[in-house]
Amino acid sequence: MLIGILISVTLLYFPFPARLSIEGLQDSYKVKEPIKFTLIANGCGLKCDNIKINVMLKEKNQVLYSTAIVADGLPLFPLLTNTRERIPADGVITIDEPGSYTIVIDFNGSIIEKQVTIT
Image 1 (cartoon, rainbow, N blue to C red):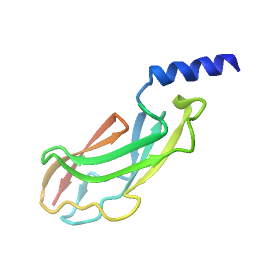
Image 2: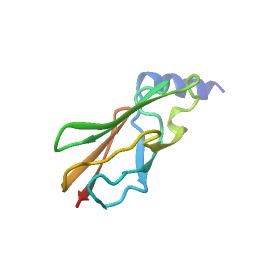
Image 3: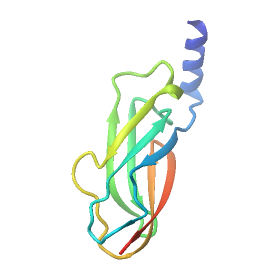
Image 4: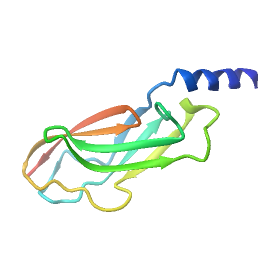
């Protein structure tokens, strides 16, 4: 138990970024076709009690979707925290112009990028 407390206290002061992966994000979409996917995060990033998620278009510096997950207290082992978040949880993400884009997903300071083509 003492080891668990020491690890938790250490992670509060020296947090590790979450490891991210994406399920269901396609390589190409039609103009205005809804974009949906699941973001999987192992670990909770820089702050576990209020996790911010932003989905952006790198080329246009445009936020497509933004949300926050508020946890019910701090997990004992933040590195072992697993989160599956459907993006978007509500509403619709679309891109209105054809082209090649980089979708950037920021999960509480951890970044993952994915190329998509809009036709």
